[in-house]
Image 1 (spheres, helix red, strand yellow):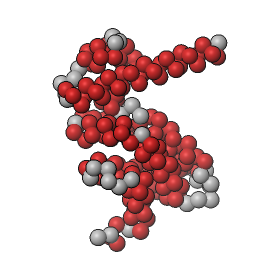
Image 2: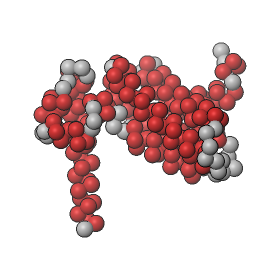
Image 3: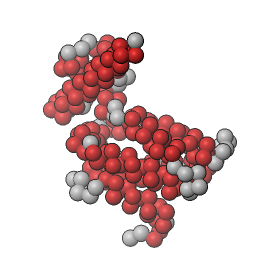
Image 4: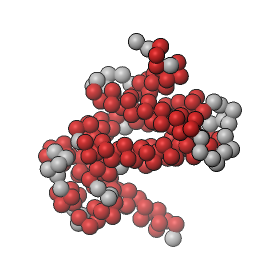
Amino acid sequence: MTEELGLRARKKRQRRRCIEDAAIDLFETDGFDATTIEHIAAAADISPRTFFYYFPTKEDVVLADYATRLERIIAELGQRPDTEVPWAALRASFLVVAADYEAHRDDLIRRFTIMAANPSVFARSLQLQAGWEDALIDVLNRRRHSHTENIEARLLASASLACMRSSLQHWIITGHRTALPALIDGCFAQLADGLDETD
């Protein structure tokens, strides 16, 4: 039974990846707006109904790795020592994920280039990141052994996401000249030092 479930999960991952690959190729060649769900389904050899089993929208295909990245950040943050100050714990956790991004550099460049050129994809990314903020706040509060609304945790979560978002956008715009982990680390350092001290 376990073996059967494992095979089913692998097949599901493979089909999901096939849909992603087909969609990204079409978005790059035909444009995001011109590509329909029917086009993607045909290229992936599935029905449009099957597409919606895996993704609620076209935008979510571009941002398919978001859930995995969030899980990675949350896992890393949850493993940081309780004695570590929250900003340092967030910084270390985001740097681990930045290294993951760098390892999948080519795929990431394709996805974020599409996102940067299409307002609906960018808007969807911000919507998903709002969920990231709540998840980070929850972990930060658990580290403090608190279950009440805390503006410090909210500020830390939103600031850390701003570091990641700014770094990714700069990375794309400048042609990926600087390694992404270095950009994210620099953003965390600037906020820690105070933005009024920067040039």
